Length: 279
Image (cartoon, rainbow, N blue to C red; front, side, top):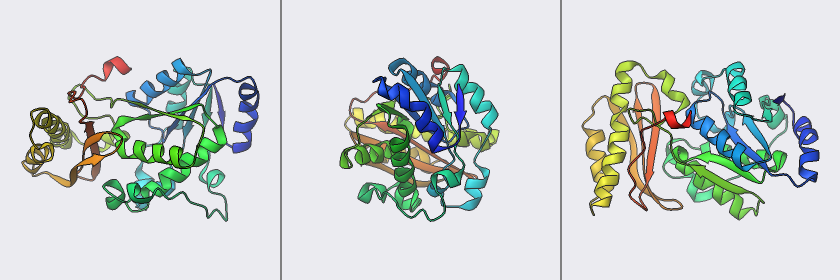
């Protein structure tokens, strides 16, 4: 695996594979790899001739400087994980490589980026949309891989690709969970044991909402009832969002940690609680 830090290096490395018509798979990440990231890398590896993983804690999608500063980072560990998964190129740019002095062009995702996560975190999806568009332009992948856990992000990226006529596929893998049901997230490391117990109300609520929907009931009311019964967490929102398919989404705060979760309601599948099969 080769580690590169500049746009020029990425383009130099990828020039020959692209000229041979090989499929390039991109996995955009902010690092702190867990089994969810590994699942994306493995899927990209299986479908691609060459796999590029970007590792960039994108400052433009953070609303608070302290949240950006505390985001978990361990490049050496992440590099070992990526190498073990057969990644060909790990792109680890410094912030001023993607946002050089004078940078002032942004991709605005419109209404989709202003609701739910976008309302709670103003400007977040502008940062996501801009950095993803830049990565697509730099790498020029055949496909880019994302996780269902960030359902609104997936919807935003799909809208960008469609509206801007970008020549790539957006592929999405199901949410990967720990055996207790909590969706894997780099932020889970901030939870104390007591806070994690509280946080488990979130996947329970999502599952209850999915079950209510399958039975013809109100998924929001079912999910909200469980979250409201757990006084040690704060609910940011619970809603059914009209993404690619109707999706029950929720966001909560447990101590100083913010967590999101969702489940598509189209086929009423129960959430999966087995992370081991992904790594």
